[in-house]
Amino acid sequence: MALDGSRLDAARLDAARLVKRARHSARQTQASLAGRAGVARGTVAAIETGARSPSWDMLTALLAAAGMQMRIELEPLDADVRQQIVEHRHDPDLPARVWFAVEGIEDLADLDLRVEGLAAAALLGAPVTAGDPQIAVARTERSMEWLADKLGRDRIRLRPPSWLGHAWPRTPQEAFDLIETECPDGWIMVRGYFGETPVRFAPAEDVARHVLVANGERPIPVQPLHEIETTDRNAARVLRLLREQAQDARD
Image (cartoon, rainbow, N blue to C red; front, side, top):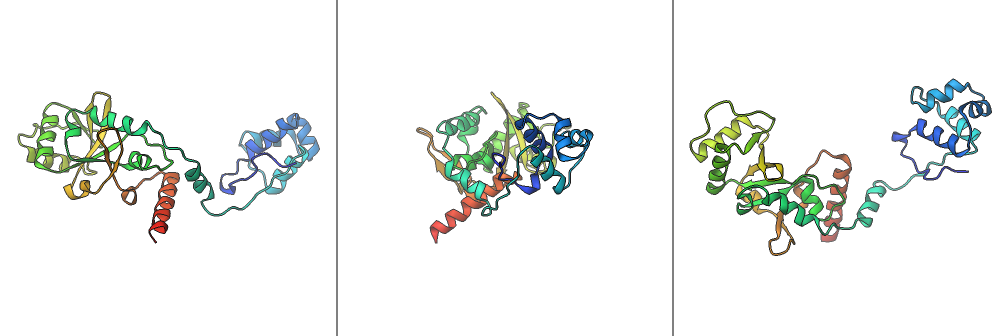
């Protein structure tokens, strides 16, 4: 008998879970399973708690003692992610939720901006968790004035977390100079009605590169798929495959 869901990723093989699951399915105690497999009960206990990693031969012997066997199948690279893409259903409420966060920051929605990161990917249909939206704002005279106003009214926290320890900037240019000095990664946390949102200031031409996602009367400008980067490994695989599919469609 093969274990249900026996398609395994060998790099993530969980021997403790497999042995315990097989034993429970066979309605055996640790002592009875150990006796059938010809090992000590303490060995089974150590494997099930993760204190001991069994050899391949011992693992298959324990599963056989429970009347089960393991079946490992090969599949095309990234087949699991391709399946996620095929089965994904767009969340119709996501655009409204993202824009709700943008509008929660005073006057932010009136600036030239685009949504970036995984929130942008999700808005474009990628099967990823959106998380909190990251906002890129075009560096213009208007946004400089906005920044100076928010700094002066204690609406901004720096990343990495620290508070400014000197006088507030007196001009919009001083505000930007301060951010560049105190916040080398470019991101600041802006306080809004519903918490803090990460915001960065980018060249106007970068922000102008966007895709519009429908959201009632006000579409949401989002970062193009090919520009989105992430440290999340699964999301990175999703984005890579979507880009490859888009390239194949163009070719």
